[in-house]
Length: 114
Image (tube, rainbow, N blue to C red):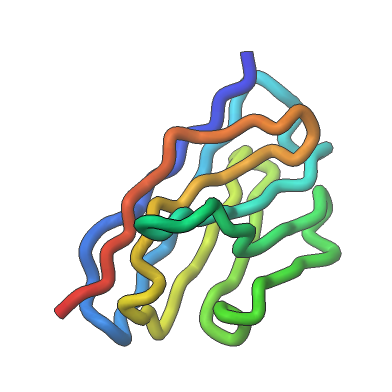
């Protein structure tokens, strides 16, 4: 069955960096568009970034442009979210999502605090 497993979250100081990973299994990873979402406390889940199957096209929400980078390694069945210059408002649970079929991982907590 389709599985998505996120990792890489944690506690980081403002201005710091983290790299999230999402490993996919149970499907041909290279054929699917992938997304990162986040859910901040008390808010709805928000789309953060999208990457096409060949990584030829990416998209970011305005609030993370220039700070976050989505990428993928299809040989490793993994999508990444490199997060730099982190701000307290980036604190959230981050989820990866396979667009087709709407599959989700369990999420990984990112906390940005001094």
